[in-house]
Figure 1 (cartoon, rainbow, N blue to C red):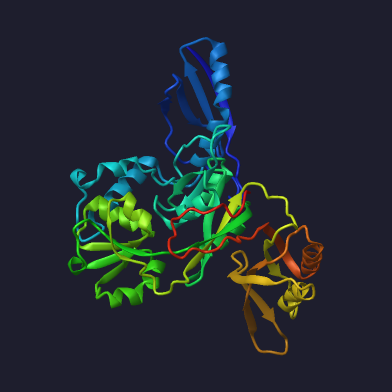
Figure 2: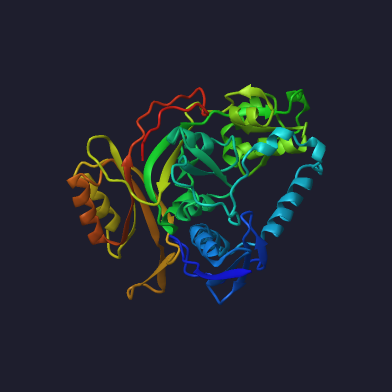
Length: 441
């Protein structure tokens, strides 16, 4: 019996705030390749893995070196502050039993073909990094059939789509080399900005390498044989419900409308629990995946319903000037008067068009106290971070000079990415059709 002890340090990735203390299940695990791995603590932020195998020392050391990359990925994921995998499994199982009208989940109600669909990646998964020569792995938030999956396939047609249960998991999947890219929504033409992803862009160190615009085409889905007059409620993502409110009323569906995590997840929930009194608002692809029928097609109130997604990577791309580029930045204004006006003037004087400006509260310093001796008391002003998109490449001298001037009036400035604009024509007939990739990044 031979053994090799390997000590690893869990480093912080991107915007993860420092080293976290390990808090997960410790014990002995047996791998398929014959290794017996015993994990034990060695203090805050470190872990010792003892590899044991019934063979010579030479083979053991070679196998230990071959698995070091996978083991580093596993340790980094395990170091996240999450509950154990067993608790997560029990919690998710209990959620499906009484979540809707007391319908209990039965094994006989679950279609067998749904078992083959990939499950959303969570923080406790131990997926190995992609091997050399494997297809590009693209992370997205949601389950198969989500609009984010369609955006990922439009951005990278020949990729392997990896579903994630949270936006932050998609960020971490790229940082930990579980995925090569992430495709996440940042704004919708009707619902506005997805603020959560703007905050995550600042927290993590990924780079925007492209964008893709996807028309949203909503459908009303139900189980086979269910008619509209049988429905008691409609479930979907809150934005999808609001985007179809008028059409649902015109269809005579004056029923309860309940929010769900995502559109495709609502369709999956109905199929898994055999809910014949409930309909979902989702894509036509979700209907195909979960064996549901389309009761009404194109039920969005406004046909010009488009969601903009950004493509994220660990490394930035080289900006060019031979095609339209867009650059995204974030900054915090310095103290003084008319600072925001001066910042925006830096772009106006150089004829650079701004396509978006978004303000978010400064989390580390949300308030600024101004003490004026001429006024009784103190005034409190909100402090903001400003996100700006402008139509210019960082290879353009105008953009370089503009940011050089902006830096004089800001206390913080960061370029989130300089990337090609999505110039593909929009197809409002379907959101699940795959078109040519807007970017080869």
